[in-house]
Length: 124
View 1: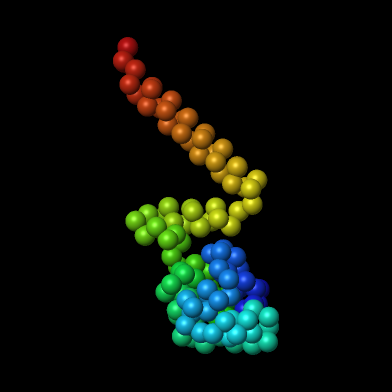
View 2 (view 1 turned 90 degrees about the vertical axis):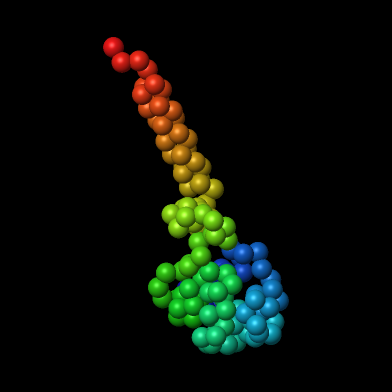
């Protein structure tokens, strides 16, 4: 995945237009357009750092495509890291995968209810 593809993914995942990403990164829309359309193939460390700070994508991943992709896994900072990771992973799944995860969660809920009922029964 090249720089252009990474920037397109960031925009798609966050519902951003080039102008909005440019505003976040502190650059012009033309600069972002050049990157997205492969006219420019290098992004500065400072732009990568701003994207990391404001959108949660690791600067190293934005710039070089290496390392983990996301830092802030959810915009809801009150959630634990595990919850944030689960949400981030689900956001990347297709509809069928999400349905499978939801079915598994429903199953866990049912098992939990059964265990609770069993523990509340009087011992003989």
